Image 1 (cartoon, rainbow, N blue to C red):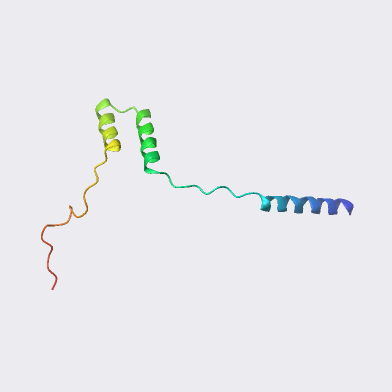
Image 2: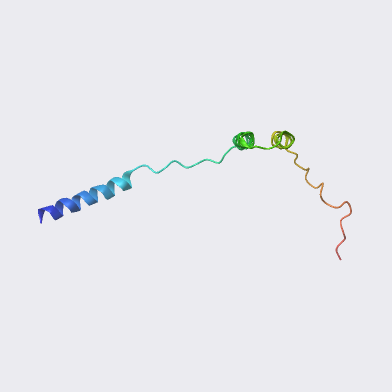
Length: 80
């Protein structure tokens, strides 16, 4: 009977210790600079031909972002 009480107390202590432990810190989102650095590191480890490597490296370093509205047609169709 005494062993059952000791075992129950030990189990309760372990459960309470687990509940009292600190939660893992929240992960923050990666910054654009970190993503770019990771992409460059992965590219440097690839076995691409030099021309392909340089083309992709330039695309990572200097991305071309289209201006807003450039892909819209010049004359919008009229409704009605």
